[in-house]
Image (cartoon, rainbow over all chains, first blue to last red; front, side, top):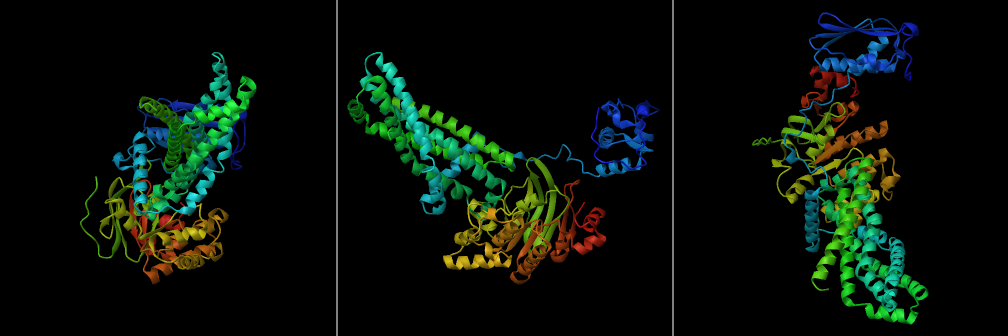
Length: 379
Length: 257
């Protein structure tokens, strides 16, 4: 076994005779003795394992003939000493080189970690360790309270913060939402065309695309894209602020972090949702047009006439409502994970990942629930 | 769990009684009982990891204690409605270890936000106040800069300016001198001493800089790591001469243990 030599021992210690290296354990009357001899750097680490010390009162480490050692030797002896002391043995060093003794003494001054009883006597007094179900409910309650205070004029939302977030949520997110909705529209056209073609009903292709995009897919795709783009960004921003004690600095001033940080983000995303939804739905319908005309023989006039007939106010408000729900969930998941982040870069990364996962799961669950409810209500 | 405290010392701004504080799930200090007297500079010292900053966060009302109470002018800092707690906390200015400037705002906006929230000053007056506080810490040119554009030491000075902007009754400082060059560290000491002398500000500061402690602290609270409680409280010079051995050793080494 090779050990990296971290530091050169004093010259008096270095007189290597590797051939004579040995580490022997001897069981004496009530004490174990470890004798180190020669150049122990080349010895396998097994010598540093404490034997069965039941009934022993002391551990003697003897090194009159120890000629060469390294930092790994010191680390093993230090661990051995600690273990022996933990088992109630007295540890005695005899004849160890001066440098090695000094190094062990230095390491020995390091504080021992807090004993096992150093836990909270009252865990209920502590803040929740992570964003579980209870934490999520508490957060939603805090958002509702903050919204109520804002609506009653008892707190203010900084306009500059809302404007900054509007830019991120709207114009900067629009291209990716439009692109994905267009691709989904195209996909829907091919899938719908293939199935409708089997019963000679290609003329209804525009209905499938229009209703599908307006009612379900435009909002869903906007939500999914925003979960990755905005939900993650919210979690990273707030998580970094948490790690840097910026949120504590707000709390010290008596400023509610939810009102100051969450509401501007939530409002900005809700304000931008209708535009993202509208552009996304339009992009999907437009992208399906060439597929319908080129692949399934629907004329442009038929397609657009059918689109105009298929658009209903019910589909529009249901689709917009769903989109608003999705983006609200994205904002809440991102902000909740960010505010609940621990300290440090790893915690911020974990919060970001959790925000995206949580946002997506919430969106899918909400999509399912709203679809079932609206269908049951006859819409 | 908590010990009711019926006494209120006439010159005590903050009273701590039987306080137990935890960092995460680990209790780092327990049985802390002391008072912060009006107008004094109280330094908190001890080995790294002994819970100094955690104690300061409890004094600021940012953490809930696992035992005991923190009273501010006789009122429990951790009980009552959010609004009542906020009123108590607003009397304090806190400077965090890493500055904790709000990164989405300029340095000037960082100072003007508390003024906007808690005063009725017009904007130009708020700006004047903020610029003055920045000038006090030697950062009059940093008003329009973002925190990310400042060095670590400049961020700390800007954070001190923010802590001072509302002229708080109690100033809580977490390692104010760390990361500062000697002239700026001395300037900061001078500013703290000045606030205390002329504005009557009470200061509680966590510090590893013993020069600073001996220069401006009236009393020193020493927290021990192994026993997880306070082992000494008194004037630094007195503790250096007659304090417990570990405290004398700590002070002699200038906080380097």
